[in-house]
Image (cartoon, rainbow, N blue to C red; front, side, top):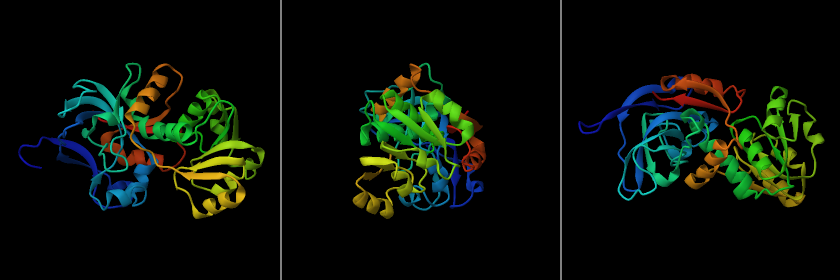
Length: 319
């Protein structure tokens, strides 16, 4: 930090490891370059990729060795605009998933990123809700709409339907007119039906996949039993493997089994976020926030997320 750079608070880590590595520190405030905006962060979403990266997995191969600041989901207010920005101005409320998979530094008081990686936050949506949206909702949208091209009448299976990505994928597939089946623990069955799932099966039942057949699209969000899950597909159906990518075993099974398989990684997309924000503001899509924590309790937020028992998203509030 030099004398001309204002400081800001951020959660940093100096080494890979447990949640205890996340420490509140003071770092230089970023400065927007041309086409970028400086956003004062009000809330930051917490995602599984965050704690996987903290451990040395996830996007650690992209970020390299610590120190770094985690976090890609942010919601806040534009503080300053760089040269050439015409879509946003100071004072605009925005939300986005900047820079993914490169470092965005969302667990901080300020971030900078290209203006078009953000969308304006609808008046009806709070900063906490907005921060819960970008990575999870963009993943669901880009898989369901862009990769799979789900259409009315398609039969769609979404594994881990109660999670951050899953609860959006259920709603987007239903919005497009699909018949939606989701897997989840029994305590979440009623809630997922409220979100639009036509059928919910308990993944704790060892034979739960035997109840499902003739699926057009599988949105696979667990990273487990990919080949077994693909067995529910109709001939020519598609499985999109999200968290762990396309395993060699799944690719081989697709080649001999008459179905399609695809890997997927989410990309920043301000235009899609504008559409998603409109659906949320209109009440067509709901955002589930499992818990909020102040920025300085990022470690506790990670520990809760790592239990894999939360419904929806966890959010850090940045005062």
